[in-house]
Length: 129
Image (cartoon, rainbow, N blue to C red):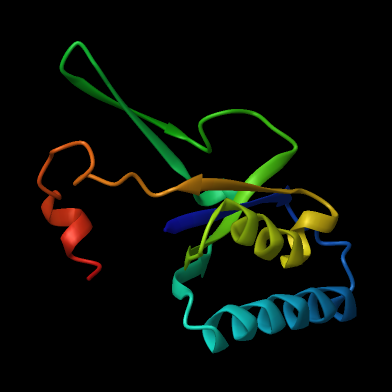
């Protein structure tokens, strides 16, 4: 089953020493290697800071954009992994290995199975295969 592991952590400030950032990145590189070696890594990316975000809503047919993320929060979505896991227990095990879990949280969401719902996969979903 496919799961997305969403990484929510406080944004790094300018006061974070480069050594601390390098150590954190080593942890992410180790986790990435772990899921790749198991053939479970489907995708993953780090996201730019919330200052670069744009939120889009359509209200009464009008497109409205707002600078920044959807909600004010101390923890922001900083990146994700898309993995193939045997079950939720394995996804939880892997999420606990992500460095951001130590100072933020990892949200695990199963990828919705269109076939079970009797719906053909949309073009966007088939583009990843």
